[in-house]
Image 1: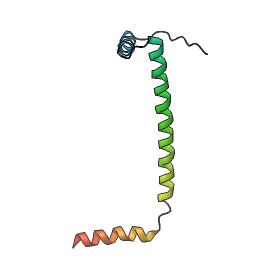
Image 2: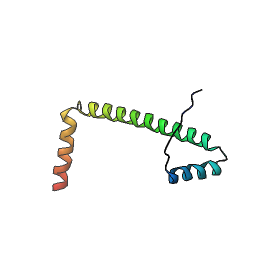
Image 3: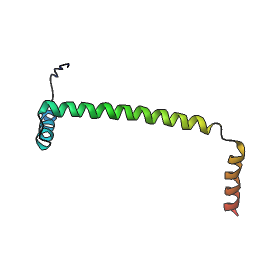
Image 4: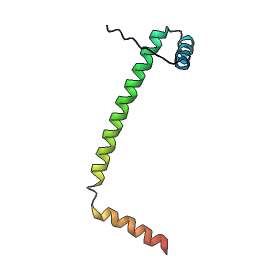
Length: 80
């Protein structure tokens, strides 16, 4: 297992981590590991969401014009 040393942690950040650790009945070290895991998971989820959005954008480029005409017909109908 790897050890990491973190220096110059702001007091307010340390106090927040300490409160979370106490609330969750963990050591500060365990709380920091949990926080890092959550951060990495969120980063991975964000990457997956970005990839999904790119796929949606690419698929929308291939929508046949007939479907676009349907939108135009709806607009004309509403304008009456």
